[in-house]
Length: 370
Ligand SMILES: Nc1ncnc2c1ncn2[C@@H]1O[C@H](COP(=O)(O)OP(=O)(O)O)[C@@H](O)[C@H]1O
Ligand SMILES: N[C@@H](CCC(=O)OP(=O)(O)O)C(=O)O
Image 1 (tube, rainbow, N blue to C red):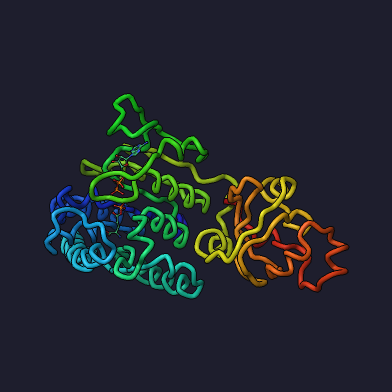
Image 2 (cartoon, helix red, strand yellow):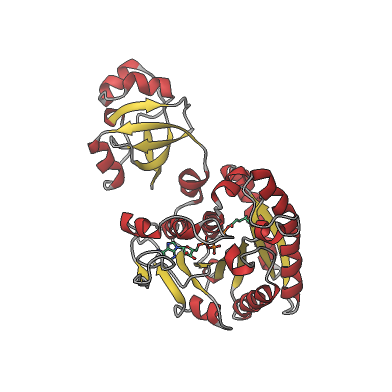
């Protein structure tokens, strides 16, 4: 087993750690600490992505239910994050394991230098036998509190550390054909080999009273992680030993196979596809869509129909088809004004009109299909 094959990212949602009325469920925290310890003792390097700061903190601040306003949630997280870490440190120490806090924002992932630094810190902690405990830096992170995206965060972390598995632990034993809370006829899907539009559709909207992401954001996380070559489990861990069993493919939940074509996306492609800031968009014709999606080809000016936003060579742009569906992202070699002038023209025509360092609008090595 190489180092990365040994790495497991476990994501635990608010609903598993806190009560519906807020506040930490200390017994649950002790239970999860034991479950994490069992992975650790089995020889895995364990990383935890935990939610629960807002849910842990809002009652202490005097709110009766999860607050709605951003600054109220941020204040709750400031209180709750400390409680959360204190509880993890306390419970993990009973198993002789040290806990380290890492708070990240989506913005941190947009900088390759910050990503690199986070990755080096994590490596060092793992080398020294600590469990990195990661949460969104809620007090400064606007997007997280708007979208409750710790599911996405766990996928980004899984890809960043090249984990072999991402275990998304929630209050339900997997993805069902419909929300089982509203439809008792719904049945569980045990394995997903490809995340299709249908899978998204059945994942529906957001979930419990304390959580925010719901099943949809978990499926989205599964898509990002499987795309990066990471196997994903979404499910429930209730009895002692369940987590290790789930890691060993016998869990109560849904397994998502890693994308066979992912070839473990390089750090650069991961950054382009999932972390970078998009500066504009390029609409392309049907032929270009096929060339990019199926043919593994570069985007040439001839396929460009429309350009929006202002961007420069080296910026990341989104590519959309004529129905405005996003098909991927890549690094552009053209400025937006250049592309506006030569979109739709043949390569010969382009070189007669403007000077660019590379004739491809987006080179296939700098392209990620989404
Ligand atoms: N198709 C589905 N299958 C399973 N759960 C679903 C589905 N659609 C919606 N849900 C809801 O998603 C919830 C889990 O999401 P959430 O409450 O955000 O959990 P967490 O706090 O663990 O992130 C479930 O409790 C369930 O109500
Ligand atoms: N970072 C936030 C996560 C918010 C949240 O509820 O997320 P989740 O339970 O994963 O849907 C927190 O710690 O409260």
